[in-house]
Length: 378
Image (cartoon, rainbow, N blue to C red; front, side, top):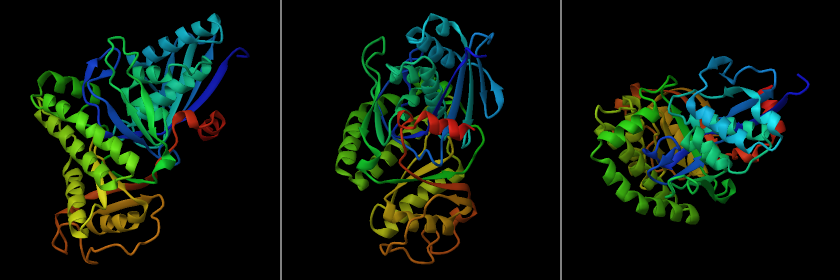
């Protein structure tokens, strides 16, 4: 139709270093705690979305990777919020919308696809409505973590205190240029995770006796991460990320019935990190795992070559994507070290990592030009 409007957006997933798990208000998607994340490399991992509004559409319609999907209540909340804020006139505000989304990485596999997917969804529809105000709040309605993908580098999502959620917004903690870090994404399973996050965290809030203990220690942990980011203190950042990841999965295991996201391969990667750090006599890697089996490793650029090489000796890796960087003369690890502490074939050797993605920190959705998103979509 000549009257139709089209808009594009792209977003990268973000990786939570201090994670949100549990809501104080499910309808408004208000979390129990603040969270801090890094936005990943949009050149390797991204969601690209095209949104079209037309008076000829009879209903809202969404497709993912070429297949129709349900228009969820969360998506409807985003659409309703942006229709109320529409700056293009009342006619457009009443038109139905078709949204087509494409992911360059596995969906619902614990790789934060909801953060990039609902962020790109919100930005594309906001561009249709010609309003980017309150976008952090609107994106949060789609998926809590989506509001963090609006920003490059490090972002913090505030839990807020108000019942209406107006003060529960995300903001940039530090730019991607502030600290040159790498994230090594170890994809051990590309299938859908065992339990959707929304249902799992609701069950945790209702049944876990450990959740209050986790919440009580988070203010100090959040402060430590803010300080580590400001001072570029890798050892501290890695430790806090690992401790919070461990804590999250302990709370999931304490949920009744329990929620288990980590697999034997996931746990082998976690053990690998501790053994590598111990063998090196310093913190080479940190790790964190969201609600899924895949484990993400934090590294400084000079250590990527070392870390990837040790991973390749310890695991069966299908493919390596991204820049390994230059080999650095900073390794105290024996050349025959295999990741199990024995210097030979060990327990981790039989585990497989399907893909190892080496990511820089990426741009926020608001930093990616609409024309670039359109070119990616086409």
